[in-house]
Image (cartoon, rainbow, N blue to C red; front, side):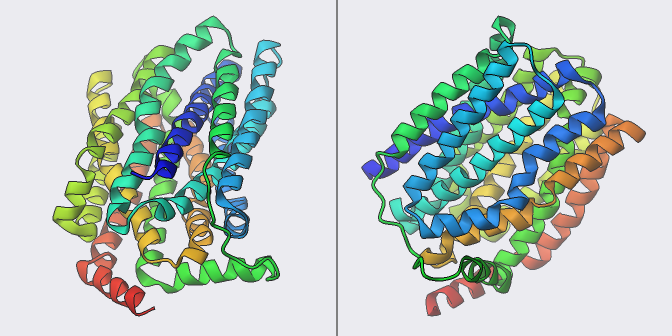
Length: 402
């Protein structure tokens, strides 16, 4: 096992701990300021907007500059955001504008950090281990860390409003120092080219490759649906399921259980079923899970079981999606293709968060998941038609010829 790969995993543990603390505490602090679904959705809009506004330019930076340096810069930004939130919370100066601004900055750091780490993976592991490596990083980011962080956040808030953010700042600082110790030779684009030309080259590869284009379209639909649900989940947990802050954190931890459980089998699933059938299965189950959240009785253990199953299959989809871009993209374009995908695929998430708030305010909280299930159903149909085994074979042949 490469020592650089081990170090990247250590960076992921520290950095994801910081992100997990910030992402878990922001909605809880927002609920202490307002319970209006439309205002709560603003926090989610701000937290998703950087994926649309900054991703393309972040990709150019990742392909122009040493990727480990970009990773370190991302965590430096994370440290600053955490310190601002910690100071405001400790001084009882919290307001919705402060929370919105911090959410925007935290996600801006994620745009840089996730893009840089994703572009580093093919440099550090063998091609036939991409699914395993991506699953490992996803589990660290979404699984093991979030299994500990969300419940911990509720307890830390009981100690003091600023305590989670202070701890997040320390974790982000550790990630920054660790990232600086990973050697990387990845500076792949001549700095004499115009940034817009670099940007268009990455987008052109993403859009002109039919398989990658189809994945991006389906992720866009799924991200819109998921954002609508995520933006209202804190209200769903507290007003429909009637759980408190600690209960909310435990429900978020159930999301992590699904990631962890699936991570042990995702490589075997992909090896046995192939990318096409794995993605078809994952997308189809997502429709069922969203609908179940909308209609099951308000019994927290039952909802927790649905959440575990949902994220288990989402991990399979995410690993196949990320690995496909890494497999079928030339190394010099990888940073721009990864972030370009996120800009196009996740660009609808702010609109999804806003739509979730409007649906909850004018219909019901459960209605948000009915809408999400309908959108996921459309996406599932597209997946079955466009991500066939033949489509993957054609893309593999084109990549080999290139």
